[in-house]
Amino acid sequence: MDFSSNYDITQTANFIYNGNLTRVALQFPDNLLKDSIKVVSELRKELNLLTTRQESSSDNKKEIGLYVLADTTYGSCCVDEVGASHVDADCVVHYGHTCLSPTTTLPAFCVFGKAAIDVSDCVKCLSNCLLKSDKPVLILYGLEYAHALELLRTESSVLCGTQGSSRIHFADVTSSVISPLQSKETPSVKLESSNACTANGSHDNGKETDSIIDGFRHSIGGLTWNLPQGHKMEDYMLFWIGLENPAFSNLVLTYNSSDIVRYDPVENCIMKDMSQTKKILQRRYYIVEKAKDANIIGILVGTLGVAGYLNMINQMKALIARAGKKAYTLLMGKPNPAKLANFPECDVFIYVSCAQTALLDSKDFLSPVITPYEAVLAFNRGSQWTGEYVIGFQDLMTSAQFNVDGGPEEARFSFMKGCYVEDFNQQESINGDEDKERATTDLAEATHKALQLYDKYPKSIIKGAAKSGAEFFSSRSYQGLEMQTDDSVPRKVVTGRTGRAAGYTGEPSKEQNS
Image 1 (spheres, helix red, strand yellow):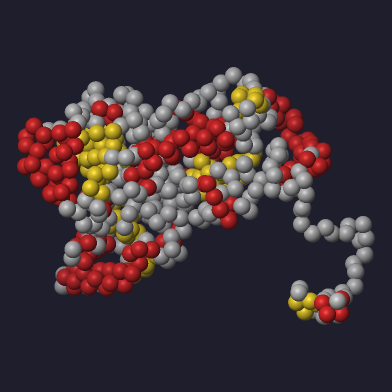
Image 2 (cartoon, rainbow, N blue to C red):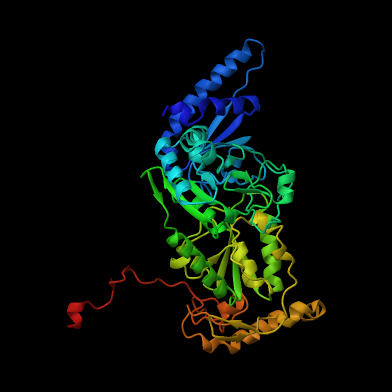
């Protein structure tokens, strides 16, 4: 495919020029960074043509600066507003795979790219699915295949006929332009629709329609579609065109009760076995049960640009406080096992990020990493998992799950320990007055208990029943270098050893010892 067409050079230049933008950040993922120089060159040529035309009718010459962003702060699918702020950019042009999450401050223009696809073969596979199933088919796709949508519509109507094409429904792309929200709050999008379907929403430029309010409009990963009144997602077969990537995993988990088939444009074949992907649900349920026994929770900030992330963090803090547990907020960029191992006191981590980077395979991590939705199930008494799954935190912020008053304050059964347990500060969280009275003695009590629990931790890596990071640190067998505090007189400076650890100067050699 033509380079300029693949990178939407003309459309991007018009967006920059018509928006009167003077400082533009071009964000590339690692796999497209090799084309960044050529993209800048082509954009510069197109912008010069537009500027030359304008100069003939105006004396004002507009200089436009283009800045390439590489090595994003967080996931490459999100708009890197942090990196763009370093060059004081007016907007961001995002290239490659994107989650189309709403931004906080900067507008963004998304270039999805145009991946190769054999439309004829795809339509044939679609026709075979129609013959083997009585359900209507809803076609969803990766955004890199959105360019072939009209051709897919045309060929499917020809091959499947009028009767077959009436059973085929296509999802549409919300928009390639992301406008920042006017406030830091997320738009009001219902978690559950009136027909009991999950509406896992992406932001549609802040505009709501009656279909969204009525609960018949659905959106996920930058795609949106409407369902007729009385229809459920379970009534449709979902036909995904694309690779097995985070966007597809998001789809499978969100609509786990629907029949899903995937067309692989690279292999030109149908993939119907979703057992491996759906096994993720089983593991997530296990992690939720494990998180219920956590005492110290770390909140990982996985984005600084997705609108509403601060509100989500505050709600997580309030949720953890109501559960009588301790929370610490951690900002460390992209998490990995080595980084999180520096916080062994945390029994579980909550990862606040966009929907397509929220699921971390924490098998190699010291402690499990869960999503905000899983945290609600774990720490909000009275919450039950009905089988539905919500990955995007923007839907969760307006969910009825946050309004659950909680079940009876009594001991709960722990599947991990095989017995009934009581959460810390259970009674104190109920009685706010008692919290105020004991606020001045918390530190003294924590220190006293830490001294009592000191001998219960023979190994520094084993976790016990510590309620805070300070108490956990006090209970560790190794707490760093032991300083002599009895003698307050400073000692004289002396010369230390010289040489290598294998044999310092002045030490007897192996030959002398023999």
